[in-house]
Length: 406
Image 1: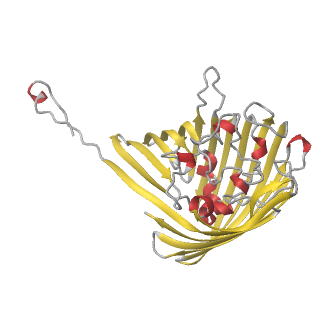
Image 2: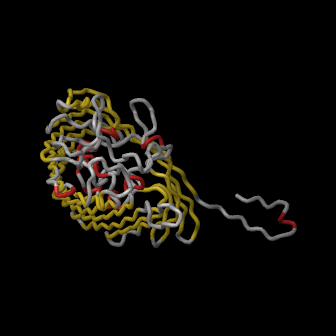
Image 3: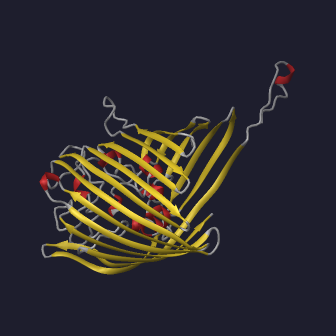
């Protein structure tokens, strides 16, 4: 409200009232996980591991990462409004900030929305997350453990795009599309550390389809190094080889930190029949021009390494409060320098029971088998997303959890 008492004596004054709203929201997801084989380290005699029981936040082993956020809108008139979203991830186990310690690490953006779409600026999701992920098993019912190995295609939004501008179209009879560009910010080199992404989706009756594409230059820094705790280009932000007393991290693709370009292409479709929904998806993830200065290259890789991934999934609403889901995921890697690469086969199922509209309890069972040679130039080990990699080619994970939304 603008007060005009003094100025009204000498100047005409108009008063306007803008409608605005701010919503506080959040999710807390916590549970107990059993892991059949968790690496404890490796020596010249081989990998070492033990079974593990631990309490874990939903962001590592459950349905959704715990978070709280603020979203709001202000009416600007003429069908336009200012919009924003600030979203902070945290760990339910100890209250620590998620996303490498970022205060609003999940999302932080502001923009304008109107009849012709929405333009936003800040830390945002790419278009694989927006258009493909909603049709996969993980976001629908399975969570992070059900995701493709180490979330290699970012279908579970493990990574965000900083310094980005994004456009999302309005819904046009079921069709939507969008695009994102993340500025690298390197003086004299417009494309260095940049990210661009495109996507589209269509929903008509029982059928839905979505597609997305991501291109990231110097991904060790721009894509995998987008959190505050990330290291410089001389560090490996994709993962680690571990040691005699520490487990490896993301052995699926940790060896490819020197890629000059990362490309992800993804497509997924769902079809609903009665109480059942069936889905299929394909993604292709490529680490190109290995051996560049983008990151460390301890195995002296050159050329391109890539992954084919195929997922089939289903979910069935047994009763209004009880849902069952099952999925199978197959990943075939093609290694750099002519190496055969690794294969990962993941089978999963889950039950979710709603205690109310905002609170549910759930159980998950996941099994993964690995074969071939992985990115760390070793016999591939099972690597269930969010869990400590196995010391062998097999791994089983079980979770009992509870989720509350507010």
